[in-house]
Image (cartoon, helix red, strand yellow):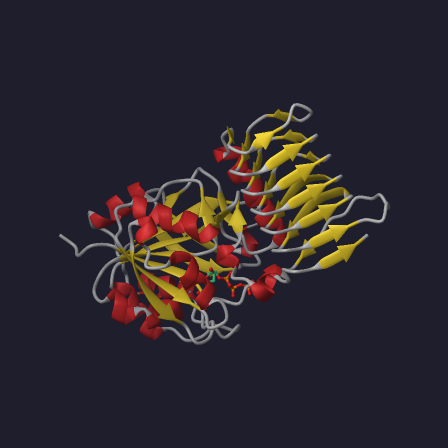
Length: 358
Ligand code: TTP
């Protein structure tokens, strides 16, 4: 019997592709359907029967992540914090996590990835033995943007290439990996890549060179890498579509209409609005004389007046006044947008505390 499976969650990194939001906030804490991405990750890990998790954090955003997760008991997990001084790559994370990991097998899970499947079945199979590593793959349209695997009919991995110009398959590496302690020896043999990072794909390729058994599973469900604004909006759309259920806790007046699957949080007041789901609205919000269209998530303590919005993510504390209309947008915390009567279609990506008049 192998020692218990541990979890290693990567929540450091730079988040450059999600600026301006990530100038002030950790991308793993950005909510999708009003729940931080990292919460989905930890719930998935806990549901697979894993109890001990190491979380890699960066100096800039680590404190916010620690404040959100606490000791992990919210998720039924025991958390060990692993500070990473600089973003040295995914394999660098494993290297610095070595004292936490010891000789345990572990699942490494990228803290900004969302997958539409539980990992329980993969964890159980890996615990049962037979592989030095197991990777999850997903067929994608643009494999050149990812790590790409070539596999045989039995799912054994033959080769891995990071962002190939001429991809040998359409199977991209999803950000969930199962490793036996053999990965440490492989990481000791690799050197930083052209971008100066210790790449996990190089380490897995090293395992293959050393004749280790690397298996794969192709997931049929969705996988969302929330690294960019459009990815994040796509993630919000998919998660609302898959998991949003009608649940109205706030008050909706008789002049309002609510269609489709809509969640309205406690102490939220909706007056003279049309809301067409799937939509999630947080707690203590105030919405009046507005239209909120499909695939929109509105964070707590937000005010929307005389506005039209759809396909947008608003983090908490935003104020929208007279905006006609806002689409395909990502608004950070406490963003204010107001209009002096001008009309137009706005597509915005605004960092925390922005103040925009149109
Ligand atoms: P990436 O999205 O590959 O890298 P990044 O966060 O630096 O983002 P960007 O390209 O926008 O600048 O990282 C995947 C996940 O792994 C993410 O949750 C951050 C985390 N990570 C670390 O914890 N340490 C690291 O050294 C790296 C590279 C990533």
